[in-house]
Amino acid sequence: MAAAASSSASPLLLPSGPRGASSRAWLPSGGGGGGRAFIRGGNSRAPCCCRAAAGGGSAAQCGGADDDNGGVVTRRGVVGAVVLGVSSSALCLQAALDAFAGGLPPEEKPKLCDAACEAELENLPMVTTESGLQYKDIKVGQGPSPPVGFQVAANCIAMVPNGQIFDSSLEKGQPYIFRVGAGQVIKGLDEGILSMKVGGLRRLYIPGQLAFPKGLTSAPGRPRVAPSSPVVFDVNLLFVPGLDDDE
Image (cartoon, rainbow, N blue to C red; front, side, top):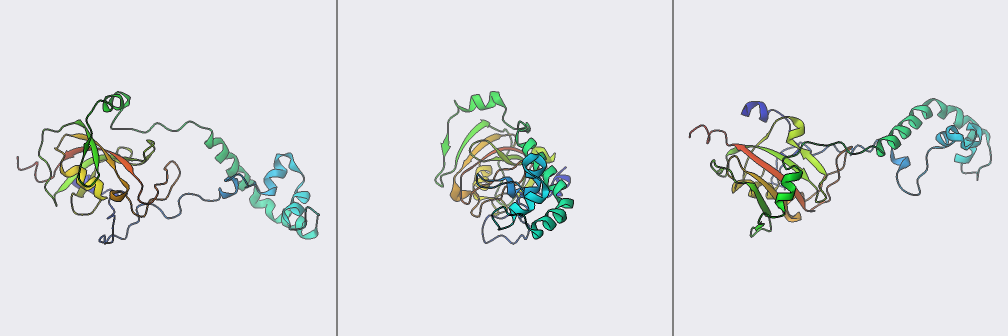
């Protein structure tokens, strides 16, 4: 089980500081923006070909409007409209799909803490450590605590403070395996797991200085994490390979 789990690339397994030697980026660099920038922002407008297709004018009129000639129809504008005609359909279709997707309700994602658990959290005591890390134990485990440098297998769900998930081992279908206390994950996660017991479920409230110094880019279905901003982790410590086997 451990070997299968560790073979999966985990976006959490990136050293958070200069000591990290890994060359893997936490997230893809593109951010998933693609060709949708033209419909973002209050001052943005769709390409003229899309406005024409929506009844905003002919392609020729549109070509002139997109020129820098104040809306005067020019030869260059007409030729540009023809050239753009081939690619405009795909671009307009993408714009329509993006607009449609924007109106859909968010997809329900698997969680470690359901609605009943969230209600129970309100009454659980908050523990604050010297580093500023805070946590609540939803369930205290009955197994051993992991020593520094040992591998651990844990299900982790990472969220921004408003509850939006930016990473989840449950969605990947297998737990994350990493060496705890070795700088393979952010400092707050390292510290939070070291005092857990196998079988435990804990919510970590990680302050910015113990989170992601460089932040994380956004992607479709995944929110942006600003540099050194607070994050929230739900962690279920499943087992400690080697240590569990000896007992």
